[in-house]
Amino acid sequence: MSALLFPGQGSQVVGMGSEFFANFNIVKKIFNQADDKLNYPLSKLILEGPEDKLLLTKNTQPAILTVSYSIFKVLKDEFGFDFRSFKYFAGHSLGEYSALVCSDSLSFEDALYLLHERGKAMQEAVPLGSGSMIAVLGMKIDDITQLLKSKNNVDGICEVANDNAEGQVILSGNKNTIESLQASLKEKKIKSIPLKVSAPFHCSLMKPAADKMKNKINSIKFIKPSLEIINNVTAKAETNSEKIKQLLIEQIFSTVKWRQSIIYMQNNGIKNFIEIGPGKALIGMVKRTIKDSNSFSINSIADMKNFSDEFKK
Image (cartoon, rainbow, N blue to C red):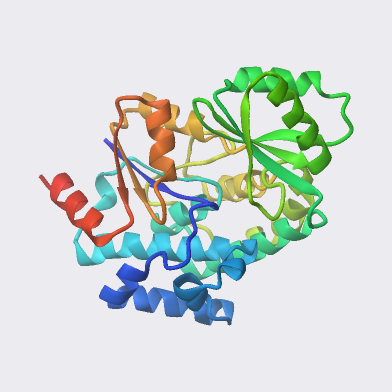
């Protein structure tokens, strides 16, 4: 059995999707839809930049959705690939919206609107420069949790934002608190890398963003997805549209349980993990968590042809 994976923020790059845009009319149509819905040239930002504007969260999130959805539609409509044989769709953070669009639970236009608003709300939740995120490498999640508990006397927020894979955990919170923790990690000779982000995502500092998004998400029509969606908050499958809405609200300030999601899918029979969208980060996380996994990344036409030939056998 197979699962389809959709990337989140951090996978963006100027020019992503350009090969598909140049070769498939359906992709040009999707990019034009995005421009029309958002009332600004998102497609130009995706294809030409400038990078600093593409990196703005309010642009990054709908941009990644647009590219992921485009690749999905080419694979489905141009290559005739039937995804009904897949058991799960799963997305990392904003990738969960891509999964919902591709499973017919949420329209592409509504997802564009929600992600643009989500990006703005997340950016506005804390003053610019007051939050920070770091990647902690080579340390188990349980040990990180214990370390955070021991630092609870430090003034400020520092929480697990993403449990991505074995030995790869992202922390998020107040800048001063994160810097204090980094100093402790350095003393223990544990590697940590500051992330170039505009806000401290997926921690309790994002609750004001969730409050802003609650009514907007609830105002949009969701229907039951065509197959099971693995959500980030519980790392379990969900098909109830009202429950999915609630989990999307909670996801804004909650840990992305990606490692647990991969394990859940493996325990429920998934052998093949296929990532579609810009970058190859999710497949790397799968391989770190399941050493002998059968995984495939699709972000070029050559990838698509190889994948289509292999999985149609």
